[in-house]
Amino acid sequence: MIFTAYLVAYLVVATVLALSAIEVLAAWNNGYYELEVTLDNGLTEHGVIDSGPYIYDPTSQQLLPASELNLPGDGPYAVFIATGDWGTGSDYVPEGGRTISTLYATVDMVRSGQVQLYDWGLNYNEGYPQEEILEVNSTIPAENLARYDALSRAGRAQSVELFENMTGADLEETFGEGLVSNTAYYAASPPPDGPMPWVLTLATGLVPVLAYGGLGWLTFKHFYRVHIAGPLGELASAAGRIAGQDLDFSIERVRGKELGRLSETLENMRASLLDAQRELWRTAEGRRQLNAAFAHDLRTPITVLKGTVEMAQMRLRRGDELDVGSLDALSAQVVRLERYATEMGGLSKLEDRPVDRKPLASRSLVDELESHANEVVAARGEGLALRVAIDEGEDGARPDMVYIDLPLVEEVLDNLLSNACGHAKGVIEVEISVREGRLALSVADDGPGFTPEALRRGCDPFFSENKSAEHFGLGLNVSSILCGLHGGALELGNGSTGGARVTATFSTGGDGDETGEL
Image (cartoon, rainbow, N blue to C red):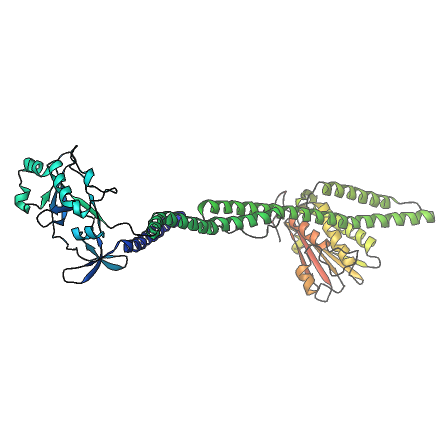
């Protein structure tokens, strides 16, 4: 559509320019062929000679302007009829921005050399003499005009009689004797001196070439720069940025149907590459967080294992025997480490960890969690007291059986207790609540509590207000993700008398019944 508009505008403008230039050049060129004649009233007139046809009137011995009347049929025969008086001119006509008079040729003009006279042609018969009275350039001199006309009228085809025979009309009777002829003449100004008329004639011929060719080149150049080179430059720049992995931008649709579709294709490709790049980044970030979480969560069982081994070594040095409970604790921690390593080994990110719910009596669950809490605080909270409260619910409304992923819940409890051990002054409180469809673990300490910033961002990955090497800011983030996987949530808060309180909830419905935050 745009190209069509350019084409139409180009043709219109080029045509107007060509016609205007031709008109100006023609008017300029006509100036070299203008004559200056003196009229009967003594005034001088400037004008151009009417080319004819003319007939010669033997009576007045003058040239009369005439009209050509072709005879019916295929033969080259015509009758020439006088239509005006000799020496008169036509009306003034505008040309080239000024008015020029058209003058009729006269015998005096031919005699003075202002006009050259030629045979008009037609009605030829073979054999009539004319070459002997013509000049070398085929012009008819004024002194030979009467003889030439008489010979031509007699020697040429008698078209006047032929017309009368065909139509029955007597033209001489109608128009007058001597005003109808079978011979006519063509008048022209003699070629002007100097090369300028030829230059103007050549320029007039070149005008269309220059107008259409030059303007066509300029139009195409402008169209290419605006509608092709510009959009292609934008697309090339966009392609360069894409090749350089700079995808954080957008490609606007460029002008043009085909280039517009190409820009949309590039934009779709850029968006797809950006999505793929972000997904790769998320995968890498997930893997990094997983590795950090893996290392973070291994610290608690390793600490418990280390503490149990140290206690066993102390007893052996004193000569005491190892009790079965110590060995069972060591075995439990080893099994836990083995299971945890197996579960985490095949994951690409923490959110991919499966939740393996198994039925467990609620009483056994409470006992397991209470025992596990004691082990963790004993190993990591030297000098800290642990208080465990069991919420039996109203009227003992605790379900007999729950569906729980116990290792996952213990990992969350590990993280919460480890966090509390690092901030508590003397006491850590754990509250275990088992209700219909929900398990809630609340861990509180008597430390400084959470700051407003920690309450807002405490579950973000790697957030920590303690920048020591022992704290990576992952415990609460990992716990929050694990709670979400088990259909629950993690809530941060501060106690009414100070200290931090973290509550983790888990869905305990049947396998696959994740109810979310309760």
